[in-house]
Image (cartoon, rainbow, N blue to C red; front, top):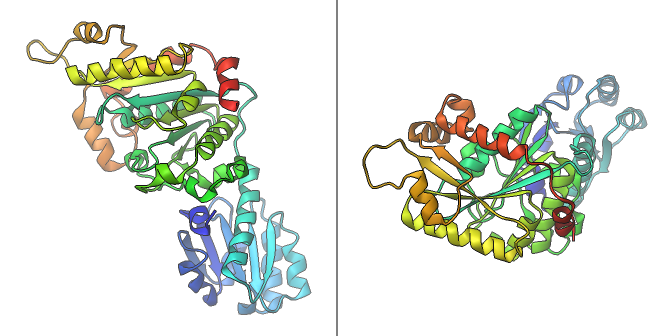
Length: 394
């Protein structure tokens, strides 16, 4: 894993003028704040993810006193101390901290990155969420055609579940459109997932590593999304994708997958471990035909063990016009639709432009009401079957 991917969006407090150069090197991708030694005594894990201290920049007694003061803090951040001269009193006070490390200069960028990765992994392990055994539930959302609104609905479904649960870090939205996903943009968030860095070492992904890639959206909702990378589907292994899904389902009560429309080597395996598979369609004849075909393909690919539910998006009240009615749409589908979501272009556009779910910017929108009803109905359907869980684990 590269240091830039691990540090993307992380808040690093750098104490010492000489550390500014690291912002363009091993700390690239992080949000770096440089400050004087006095800042160390007020540092909290809630306002920075890592503190790097240049021991050469400060007198030993002052640095030792600042570290001693920090050790009395109930929520100290991880601290990495670097330098050529490391006095015993300074190191002794540093070791009073639960999460700390020492790196003697001169050091290479790789050595620095390894020390940072170790500290962040320990810190994330301390806060990694853990879902009750067997209680995790996973839903997949896939668009029948491009522009059907699948990502919008995945975002709103995850938001509704987060509100419904109320527990911290209970929901994870995973954008599996690895090459050009837009869930992060819709939420005004910074994507940090770089599965290509793992190559064939997917087994290294655990709860702590997963949390290093997470972008918090709210106290209840986390996002896993990749920066735009045109060749991502070729660069990311099947094993890495499935491992992320396994670990996410171990950590979160609810996992929502925003699926790519076209099948990938891991698509059916991912869907086989889901409690629900939702196919989103517009109310146009081509979209309805595509939705029927996609639902049939998924059902056949899973040997009938999972029956996708079709959600009709952008329903509009009409007295006249060419758009199919709900009944007409169901005739074209050859099956009942699970739900319809009302059209509210103004709310959807405003939310996308402002960054964040519609439920936050336009809580009275018909979209929010319809999604909430869908979530309540599906959530009442019970947890993932043992067969589905074992299929994904295999």
